Length: 109
Image (cartoon, rainbow, N blue to C red; front, side, top):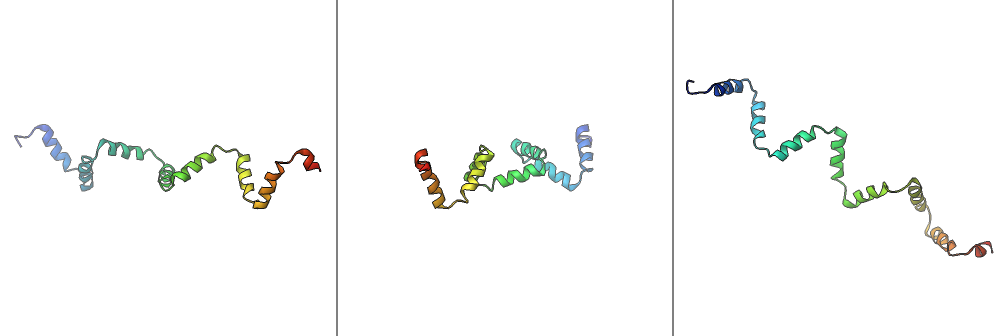
């Protein structure tokens, strides 16, 4: 005891106040990189919805992500037209395009 500094004696007594879980956590912390520690703290700033969204995003393919972003560039009219188009038969679509090749006189006739 006489070879120990006050800090060493204090540390020894403090250690006896710690639970096994606290001691394990302390040792585990020393195995972590600064990036791990930063990520851990950042995770605690996130709400469950943000965490869920992050995990969900990882289930999406690049095509799905691209389509999601593209959808946000569309107006309600674009989206409505797209859905309407899916209700049309190939014949109706062909007739619609053909109609656009006709002059007003041809349509009137």
